[in-house]
Length: 69
Image 1 (spheres, rainbow, N blue to C red):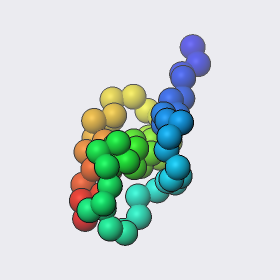
Image 2: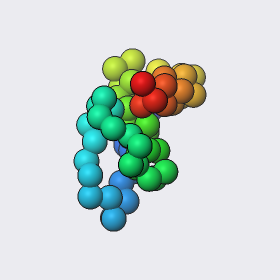
Image 3: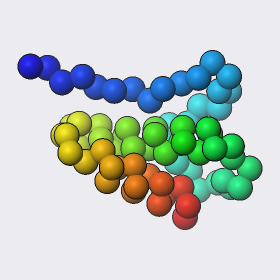
């Protein structure tokens, strides 16, 4: 069975494109922008691991921690 590779969801009104979480200022982010950045970073973490299941929460929390730094 082939596994489905989830892509980060993009909304129509999102003007910014994020490939990775950068170390720039996050104080001006909306909740939606913050979640998009976390989701994209978590996606790349999963991709680097070959989308092995069971690490979704770990990836999300690590991406969230990186955003806060």
